[in-house]
Amino acid sequence: MGKYFGTDGFRGEANVVLTADHAYTIGRFLGWYYGELKAQNGIEETTRVVIGKDTRRSSYMFEYALVAGLVASGADAYMLHVTTTPSVAYVTRMDGFDCGIMISASHNPYYDNGIKLLNGSGEKMEESTIELIEAFLDGSVTLFGQTWTTLPMAKREKIGCTVDYVAGRNRYVGYLISLGQYSFKDKRIALDCANGAAWNIAKSVFDALGAKTYLLNAEPNGTNINRDAGSTHIEGLQKYVLDNGLDAGFAYDGDADRCLAVDDKGQVITGDHILYICGTYLKERGDLMNNTVVTTVMSNFGLYKAFDEAGIQYAKTAVGDKYVYEYMQQYGCRIGGEQSGHIIYSKYATTGDGILTSLKIMEVMMAKKKKLSELAAPLKIYPQVLTNVRVSDKKKAQEDAEVQNKVKEVEEKLGDSGRILVRESGTEPVVRVMVEAPSEETCREYVDSVVGVIRDRGYGV
Image 1 (spheres, rainbow, N blue to C red):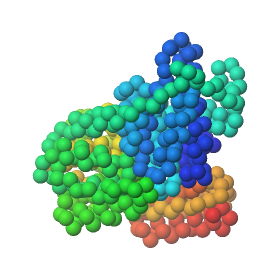
Image 2: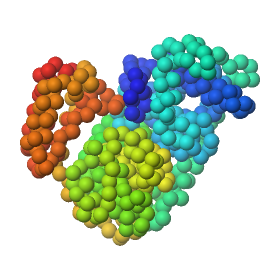
Image 3: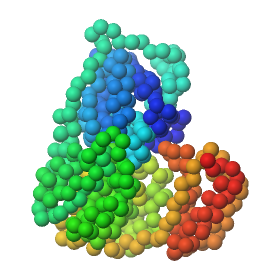
């Protein structure tokens, strides 16, 4: 992780951590850098960058600041307006853009925002390019044989322009509809859009495939994104599905790159359940490349036991869909994801895609003619307790000798009956302490013991 960019972009409270000046500077650099790369290679083409945003009030500010920087450097900015992160990735790679930008802080509250950068293939931007951007944000960058503290402004006909590109978003909707292999006729489905980017996309897709669709939290006002809604607050969707006797419900986060589900019994279907349901389905069809599902270290013990019983191999990466995708690309895997609902289908997308994930779950339901609760039943989830501790220094807190000793003590007590995982967040000043064990009481006891040491050592804030 860099100074500004974490595992999922440059994120923080709008105009406190991430400011309009930052956005303008990033736009200036990207517009100039890609233009200069072309000039160095003798390519006389205008740089083209596509931009999407979620429904936060500050997203407009960052959008216009980025656009101002891009066009001042000679790039053309194509604006998708309010849309999902996976749609930006899709349009970037399909329409030959130099890079893509998504303005979103995902599942964070409305007052946070973020800038996610995608390369021309619609993948998370390379660390080497991120490092150049960070250097320029800090005052100077050495590139093309010289050190730059300021960048030249485009002049006259070289100044960039903006292009309304809502057609790109519409084509993405068409793409999702084209992936539907079954009619959803007679299926009653709830969609919780978190008052975020999915609010004007998800229903269109499900309606086109024949479902009777019920919308929740699809009235964004700039400050209600993720508020008691979506994949991080799924209780409302659980109640709605049960009260109305629906077949299933799907909950997205603010930028719709995550999806969690609720089955016909009102039970939460996590990312681990989704990996199990879709992974075993792919294996049955002979489509599970390398017979491997890619998980992160946060996936539940129960998932691995279920995969063992199903004869499916699995890989474990660091937390972050970026790392899941890198592993999938390196080893040619078809499906991977996180417990939080970032699920990647490498055949169809380069990022987690919440709406695509919900379509794939529906595909399994329709193909196997089973209820979602029946598909999830074989997976037995171990009790898990996760506590997020806000700290003054993530690295020091984790490396503290007394903290490490307490973690080792818990590991020894758990033995083969569970596990403890202590890691830092990639996007917040937080250390996450997680324990899985046969009982929730045991989990809580061990988590509290480690969190207590972190706070006693003075790292808590």
